[in-house]
Image (cartoon, rainbow, N blue to C red; front, side):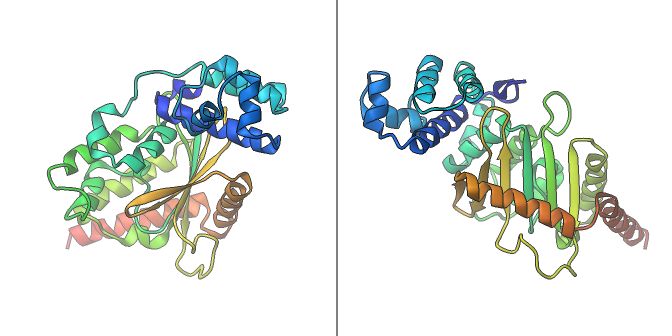
Length: 289
């Protein structure tokens, strides 16, 4: 199964391939000028290939990675990825409502095999109902009311937790995310029911972090790790006006370790389902009073 078999996005593919080229070159302690000599080009072109500003040809990728001393399996995997670029970007209809800094994430998310996510304020976008997503955008400082319906449609279009190439998700969310009744009981009741349905899927691992776990590895802030079949994982940290991509392998591994430790500290999958069910039952009691 290829990355492009999930959600095509040439910009995201160039981002991934460029990162692999740069990391391999730096591990080989080779300058961009020396790299350019391997494929008879200027250092500027090497820079463009590494930053994704230019389309990477599979033959050039293979030659460069071989010169950098990469193993044959890695060379074949990345050069094959370079040959799969599709000129159609799946999220193009929603481009006008995506901030420029968010477009890269959307493209990478569409190519990812799995996602690790820690969230403390609201449900992950992949798990939201349309009504919950709309409630989060009500009165939003950075989303104009006229754009909100299209933003919601875009968020729904991003979701791929079922069907072909379903995204595998490992999620830890704070308990009080469940207690934030966004949009009121009429929105949260179907949202709880949706979470329970998702929790039954084999590709979903959902853990609720109890409030009484006072200290854990997520206290530094929310984060996502995107994992790919043909490229190394990338960390993603979002802030109100932009995002940070964590690309250093050691740092990404720390985030993966943090997810492991938080899953162990949080409620089990079964107990997490129970926590959602109790809140659903409580909403039912409130609606009958």
